[in-house]
Length: 448
Image (cartoon, rainbow, N blue to C red; front, side, top):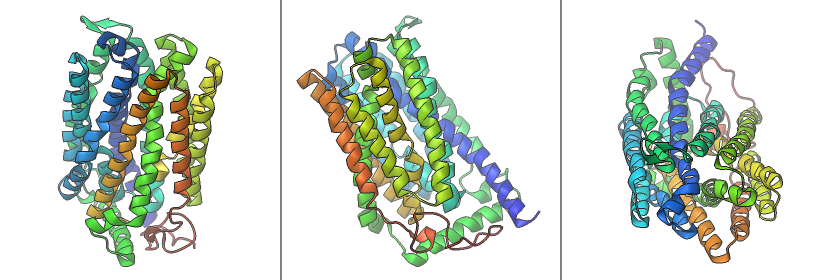
């Protein structure tokens, strides 16, 4: 088998045995994250939660994330990413099920905090420890784009299911309780399955031939050497790096809008439209299906053009327009159009974004930096839902909150354009992150 055939075969197997299980993990994670937004349609009335209480409980999930994100990412990188992912899924599945048994606001806050602590470091482990070991810098955006279609697919599956479940009673449990119980089960099952399905390194993969192991190991080694030749980062240096800090602020502003939108979207849509819970679930699924198509195109376009910044910024500007214009929409279908624009803009550039840090960092430096970016960013996951709830409770309207979220998304788009155009994994100056300078066996040398 020649080098090109080895490369193609190794990549196919990596998609099947690394990207596919990670995709399923992410689908389950986002179904479990998003179910609180649909539970609110009946849970808030049952438990006596006002908009501010719900916003604080939804957002406090990310406080747990902040505390445990970086330590978890470093533990996984040092020992075993797949075992750490299994630990994350099993603990978050168990805690998620406890949501069905809460009775007051303080229990709500505590369980949401513990849920965030349990899930902390999930995506840093995926982005910094799993994907880079199996995919080159050029292929990474495409692999992450495919993996992150899970964000919308989780909504396409979860929104109609949640809309239906919250109107039912299952074994004596109210619909929102059944929602939390039933959607906790897949996390427990997948937490066990991932231990046997994935491998931590190419050399440990029983599903690769010797030649394929050598190719993937060599590809990863050459990329690390190219980054190290440019600059060797310690974990502390990575956490203090100016580019990393800009990524943190950008992601904070983005995630403020992202989770403010996602956690409140079903409630705002019901407020504007008066539609049934089942119909709202279907409408949200349609919006996310459209954003899924946009995500697939964006990941492909970024890899093809070897460009990241504008692929991220333009989408965030679109999201800001959709969110801001939606504040003034009163007709249900007009609001739906703006809601769909917001879904496209907030979701589509995710894959491009998470291929950026690993274009100039690797190993524990990458794990720590991605953990920092995700944890600081997820403070926005606290700020967005809470401030949205506070503004709604104070003013009686979502309009001011939506304008606030739109400004946050627009600022994130502007900041993305300040990032460096070219990084060490790209081989110099010119374009945005792409193929490494070091040649990988079986591939032609990159054009400059």
